[in-house]
Length: 230
Length: 273
View (cartoon, each protein chain N blue to C red):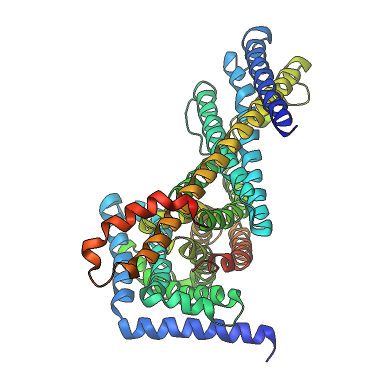
């Protein structure tokens, strides 16, 4: 098998392992989804009961819920490797370190896509959003936004996983980094829902894609250094 | 010879410090008392001289932090890490100064401390958050090598992020609402009187000299900190090694004799390899 093929199959194996572990455990995944839905419900308490205002704010609220729950997802995907020194074993595998990063991004992406799909339903119900015609653009926005968050979040989870106070350090480092992602994803979602009158949807999707590429390259290039001193 | 050279280097740093001090006093005097007030913005525009200089140094510090991180990852020399921490601390300081100056200028000119329509303000706020996160990350890592590596990669990713942040907030304004208020762009348009331009250049030079002096002093302090950390670590290692050597001779009743070998170890620490 070629070097690239080996890297991909290793990344795939890591992502599959994470998926199997989550499916067998179940509790973490369910509680993260519940947490995100709860955040959306509480935003309603904070801004409601005016449903027009909620509908107007819904793109921002949706993405804030995704970001908060996403922090839990990427932190957990690294946390499970710390128990029983599994990260040490991973670092010892004779594969490219980028495969480990790619595998973790992949499992983070899958988890975030499930989260995004569930939250779209929750937003439709709670804030009375009409997704119908906007759905293809919304799906694309969620895919690009989730990929960017998984790329940045996985890198920072790798930085903080063996630190004390990592519960505080991870959001502190990730939130300023994903500021442009949040901005672009919220604008794209708002444009998609509003029928894109000013034609800005495509520009925001391009910005999201640019963020994804830069974070993936930066993360893949530097993540290996973090495994040196396991 | 070496000590003579070191003394002269020390003198050069001192001279640099004095020159920077004089330059800042002169720049402040000129910008406050000599240069006329701006026709449209009045005296508030005088804030622009230190503000622009601080903003320039904020971004310069960010660049130096990232480059020093690359240096560490490449050469594995802790001196690069000492440069990185010095630049990051000065970066946090000058970023905070730039934001503060911007707010002081914004209140009389725009009517608000915080202007959501100014992309530079938002980018600089994110930059401050990145510097603070970087410094906290360092604070919470105690092994010098691990800390240097973590800091280096975090600095690199942050440096890759800043252009996207700036791009996104510029687009935000551009796509969503046209520029309305006077932006800092218009402070120094080509028609600005030469005396304004010269004052700004002078202030930039003065601040950069002060930055260079602070960098040198902070770097020296960082080296001292590293040396101290290294000595403490070496002392601990020696003590642990001696304890390990002493343990077998303590026999089966380790608990009773655990104290004296330790005291012994501390006393003879210097004589061992």
